[in-house]
Length: 441
Image (cartoon, rainbow, N blue to C red):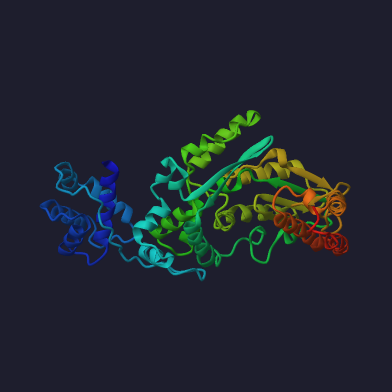
């Protein structure tokens, strides 16, 4: 009953804010919202206008709490003078603040619903701001399809792919809300015009390269930072909360219980499950990479400043942090500093993945060798060449474990990647690929 009472107090707050601010209008809209015109509503409206002589358009949550705590409202609820049916939601108009970037203009939650082509009640269900999905017993009642990926001795990874309707909404948010907001210059992952190559090229020919890995990047992005991204874009707290709800999720308990065991990582597994049980960016949503980049602005800002002070170059590709510069830099001091800054920003460095690479060693940045120029490693080139050789001798189908179309596309993609790094090597592999007889068994 408490949850329904809270729903009624929220509906009354929205109804009160949906028009002119005087008692008669408040009572009329309150009656429309909950279907009750008893005396308690008059007393409640009087208490509200006494508390707020002007409509608190930017404090709807406080107004809802005030209504829920009001003695006349509580007495009416106890005496069942307030109908127990679902209240009607009236949308109020609260203009968007100044837009720093050319994001989609959305003044109210009603504007969000109209833009995404859903009614307000459906929008509330998709945003799931009350976290009801976490207790849902079956995937059919969820907005996401989830599956665990085992990774040997490493922590398992949970992939959470939004279903079609939510995914379409997230793509609109990505294109018209998150897309126009600039990310830090150091961010290269999932940024138009930047790539693995632009990230790696910054660290070519350096005496000293250090690579750090952020642990569980998406799930460690603090949702208050993600909420702050929408607020910084000019959206009201109410609109920002709905947009955030559409881009985040809480993993259902039944899914968390299915997490693969990791005998040597019991503590890490516990913390991963705890993070997934709370609101987080789902790995699989189209909005997550962009929102994570924007939420990591402060992290990039501080790490870039620390790099400049030490005459180093810094860049980040998703969870991959790379610093490079002169050999005189202390790897130990840099590691301590990066670890402290990351922790202060809500992230954790995976110490097992930290790599210090000197000029006499092979230096790799996101899979690209950067000692002299961006290049593929000899071992990877030889491995791909050997695979093509086996395909030529035994037929491509002998090397495919799935659909031949998928295998062919994957093989072509790997060759195209090599071509970007080395035109000569790529051309050699492409000739081998073009000579394959795909009709062979």
